[in-house]
Length: 475
Ligand SMILES: Nc1nc2c(ncn2[C@@H]2O[C@H](COP(=O)(O)OP(=O)(O)OP(=O)(O)O)[C@@H](O)[C@H]2O)c(=O)[nH]1
Ligand SMILES: [Mg+2]
Image (tube, rainbow, N blue to C red; front, side, top):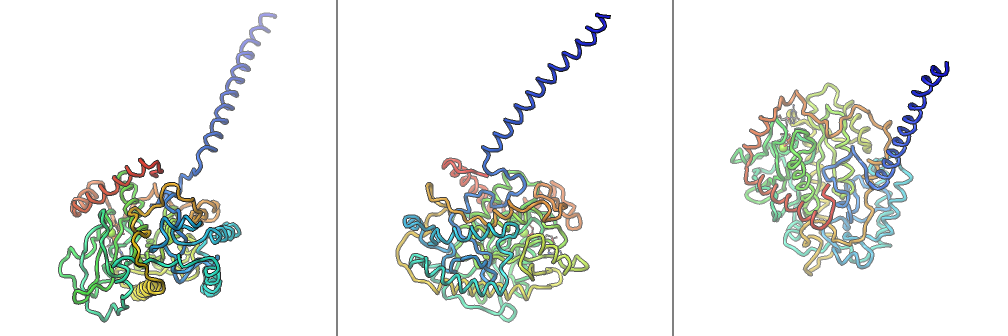
């Protein structure tokens, strides 16, 4: 009897001590997990914008677009990052745009009250009017002549004399100028940049916008491919009339294509970021989304990043010819990105739908850029923002909090958007457009100008090395 009792107690005792040690182990793991969480400041597995380094947002004030600007204590047009105070700005408590910190704090406060709305969603036309009035007074109260854009180079002078043109009446030719290299081309006309995921139709849209032009050579047209990655670097095209440049189109490589190697993705991010943060002549970024697709985390993150980088922007839904009810799909995109009413603009490069409307917007954006340049003082001195070469703040520069778009992407709950939206990592090309295999992509890549790709990669890698050396986060 005693033996039986003993026998039944032995495993019980073992089990209890094993259970205890398991519990202790679990407890230790939990503590470790908590510690790791608290030491990793920005744990954000989902939202990795092309401009993925939050540090890059420093010192650049947000502006969604010139016509749909946020009503929050905004800064004047002239304080956009097209040249400005530069390093000297920080001495008097201003960022490189010459905007004082007080303004920034005001904007951040308003964001807090609109936690679940992206900062650009509240910019209706009526509010814009009010904001323009209030922003003028805010700016005049807080800004000084330092706010002026120093027009210290030939490009800005030349931009100031740019005249609008009628794209359908002016005989023109499209010319491929080259790709972004370590020395940015010095262009004399306002630039329109095409951004968006791979295969969304950026190059096709660029081509149809210049469809009335007669290009002398096929290489002067933007490369369109059924497989993603057709555009591998920042390519510049000039629309010209009798050798006189009218406007510059900038075709950017697409983002979000999972099959590309990490190096190529990094190179794409950095090249695009370099362009966006250093271009003096950017009149408008055109962010394209395929109308058939759910808005993805990548799209939201890129929009937020562009907002935070102060890139004037229009959202365009492409391939409208491929859906039965474009207005329904348009609404989905509107909701998915939290856009103001009426956006995005729906276009088709197949049928030409929306292209005339887009031209109007582009010309207006160029006019605004020119007005902005002409509305400010001319400074003769050397050494403005654009002379620092890399478009980044200097080490030790005061951390600024122009990151409302980023905050929005971080803050919205799961319930706000459809769960089906794919994250960038899962992005695959639509089989309707492409049955792309890796071999196809490599073949297409080889057909691209290898010299351009080398320049881009080399350029980006040296940037990466420099950032690592400077102790900055690379990703
Ligand atoms: N039906 C239809 N097809 C389109 C439209 N726009 C582009 N496409 C097709 O979509 C594919 C991709 O077009 P691209 O213009 O090369 O796309 P992209 O965004 O420049 O792509 P990457 O350079 O790889 O980033 C091509 O097969 C185009 O013919 C459109 O409006 N309608
Ligand atoms: Mg392309």
